Length: 255
Image 1 (cartoon, rainbow, N blue to C red):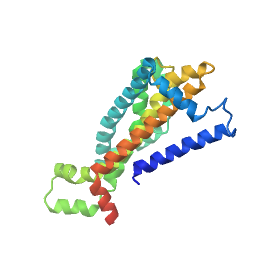
Image 2 (cartoon, helix red, strand yellow):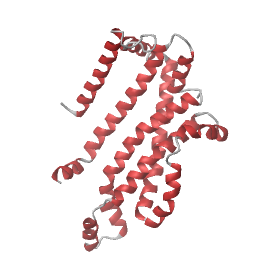
Image 3 (tube, one colour):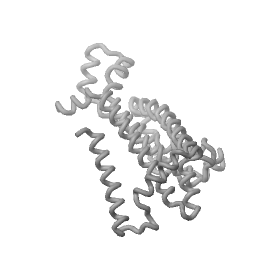
Image 4 (cartoon, rainbow, N blue to C red):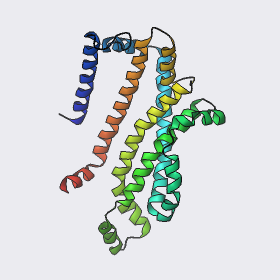
């Protein structure tokens, strides 16, 4: 059984346990509706144009945020990983900024750029850039010195060292950081939509349905869709990584 099939089996098992727990009275139905009701609500919502616009707005903001985080995190990580002086000088600032949660910056961002799409994209970039940055820096710090010495002995210059030796070694680590950041960016986008009261988005939909009594099945449908989106994105990136970096898996098995 492949990795995708195993993860899908686990997900279906979770939904079955959820359904059983509600139907058996182990979970109160007025707090958590059964999966069957949530599934019917989700099917109805997928035919609603307004809901689809919310979902598309969230996914577009996520995609833009992840792309910007990659454009920032990878080059910056390359610089810090190759210039130890800059890495040491920036360490305190990075360790100061990194623990600050993106949602804590919502008031500041709303004051400066408002609560529109720019706000959730900005905060999602802030949240997602750190795994990419740290994985890139770490990858360059873990290059086998023997590999570097062999390349230098072969007459490899600095540019060739970066493109032919360092980047291929670092690529699987960088891609892992991107995969982690993809989930973080989605969480940040939906959280900002929810907390900041965005005009459009999946988080805004969940907030509006939660404020209106009697729509708990739709609240859970939106929540489940967010989880399914995160699972699907991670599964797609994981499969892409296995195809792109088969040689890295082969090296790890050989080691």
